Length: 323
Ligand SMILES: [Zn+2]
Image 1 (spheres, rainbow, N blue to C red):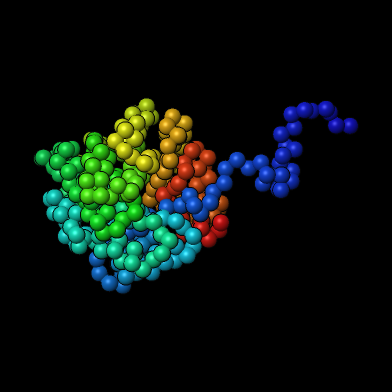
Image 2 (cartoon, rainbow, N blue to C red; image 1 turned 180 degrees about the vertical axis):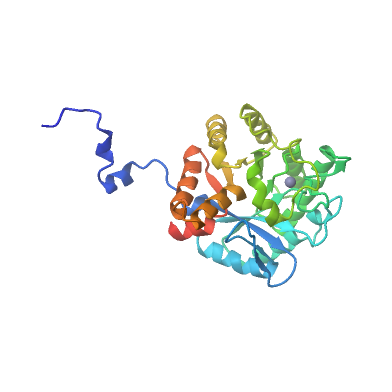
């Protein structure tokens, strides 16, 4: 005879249909933003060795890839550019015919139903690989901010749907909002990398974006990995400066930050599952040490469960095929 037990939590777990009914978090294609890398040249499709399945594309192959991304039902991409020439002031970042500007025009012309978000920073474009202008070894803030505003404006002029500043300079969201509005781009949202940590998880990205700093690191502008109250102050400031969507980066090791940001501000919240997170899952799966597909889905669901409304992930295509 069974014991009377009011609290039998397993009642909701025996039948898969009941499990479906009570599921609290669901991952959908609408949650996905696919990061993509664009280089000069023609017919380029160069795989990043530390990120299997992720490529640098030239504009022509990028357009074809974007058609596939849109056909899979992924709503948005975020673009990162690798310039032909790098210099001290990152000129190509804000050149009208820069690689990103060319890519945006080509995609907007040929691909329907795909939001083009652009990453705004200087580190891919500067010869020293830092996120802004330097004085000696110091990354200057306000001088960099004016270049970022110029870069954002040139993306908008090329047809970008959304601007995503990733530099972590102070005051850049306001400067970009002002620059966009002044030129009539009042409807273009800003997704700010609001709480971006100085993380070891970015390693493979630096190969993909060819943006490793020539000396030093990014700890003078990116956040200390130990802090979360500071993340809330960063996010609060970006919202006050006009950010429409706030981002936490990286994602998987920062679920507490995502949770606190979402709880406190209730803003549309993005999380970036970065290159190192992707590479670790891929590598373990390739070795047969974990079930790659299962861990991919679990990692993304965890990010959403923590409070993210949208996830930038290199898994976007793989996930979209499954959902
Ligand atoms: Zn940067």
